[in-house]
Image 1 (cartoon, rainbow, N blue to C red):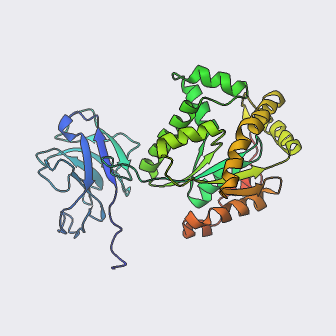
Image 2: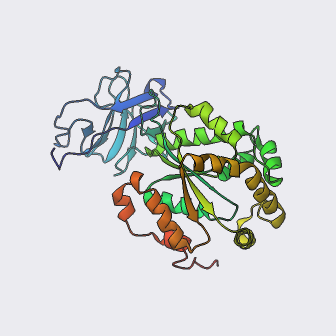
Length: 346
């Protein structure tokens, strides 16, 4: 294998909302053979001018690649079906910008399109995710450790609590019901929780290409597991579980400390007591199920944060990119671990 060859282009581009409807559609990695570009650069398969390039998936475009980078003009360009340029964006970015408005070029028509980058072919089913369930009482620190695993180890952290709070804030159809259940310290109905998780996992895989997930706060009940089986099937291998064990007195102290700045409606002693009682009644049977199948890694969450993180890192090592695992802690991660103070608010 040629060590200087660029990595294969495996990304897919979705273009939509343009002033020229023919522009819209799916763009796939270019299959144009190596050829010298207008700047004299000899491009390789899937590339043009040293950057990734794409053809129209429907094969109707007169120019290949139809979405590519110009070294001469230092811009990304999207072509019409007849090969004339319709939209461009001046930048040195390695990928077409998906978070800024494109420029309408000479043969284009406003509005400029939106661009979405997919890490998997949107015409095909997504690969099966690699999931680790994460359970622990309120204040056990599981959210902090999941955030560290995301920042340092490349795992995607999805918190059922965060997803439910975001859905409640967005004011959707289930917002009022979610508010009632969370404030009362009760479990949100299975169909709401599992649907939010599935949608978030699908979106994260397409957006990032990552398939390793930490599901923080799931499954909270055996009923949740029934919802999981409905989506992934009973024949699928049962995910592993991290269980953060911590004495109630320590949890209470942590919640009271967190309440000073979290702004969460459930960060109070009354809600915590209800949540803890619900955890014992509904979640412990689920934990016992996983223990019976030797699928639980017990984490003593009463230890110092560095020691807890070391255990989490070790338990995820088999599916973690070694290069990511070896990288030094970021400043944000050091603050999460208490190794450096958070900056003072002005």
